[in-house]
Amino acid sequence: PPVNYYGGWLSFYFALAFIGLVTAVVGELASTFGCIVGLKDSVTAITFVALGTSLPDTFASKVAASESHNADSAIGNVTGSNAVNVFLGIGIPWSIAAIYADAGNKGPYISYSCGFGLSVATYCICALCAVLILTLRRRFCKGELGGDPMLAKICAVMLISMWFIYVIVSSLRAYDHIGDIWTVNSDAPIKGTCP
Image (cartoon, rainbow, N blue to C red; front, side, top):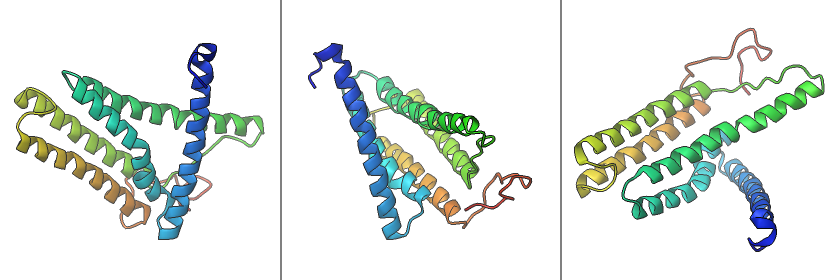
């Protein structure tokens, strides 16, 4: 609907509904693709689904960086988007599940994760390295973006390599080729095993 209907709210809610629909379709397609090629859901999520949801942010950040005199809006776009994904994208569904479990007298809502500790630790290390690169570029290159083309390419390769490191480490953990840094409590109902 046109944005002048009901002060733009009708258009906003339609956009949210379509985003939800497309997200559901993309999730199912990614899960089906992962099943066909033999990938676990967690590996499919950190590769194909993550790329599919992050590419629009990447282009938005590129436009923001190109049209701004500094990189603050581009970096803010990326960090803000990830904050929404983590705090709302995980927090709201977990809260709904916990409230639903409590309302149905099913006891506390417990969700065990296998390999989450290593994945989070790897992400945090890579994120700190990325911040270090940006800080060093600001200090020595007088800006996060641009500057010497060769140095910019080296930094780009380093940042892209961090994504590959994250995917490789998380995938190796998903397929039990490496152990996790935190294990499930042995007193838990699952007895330390993961599905």
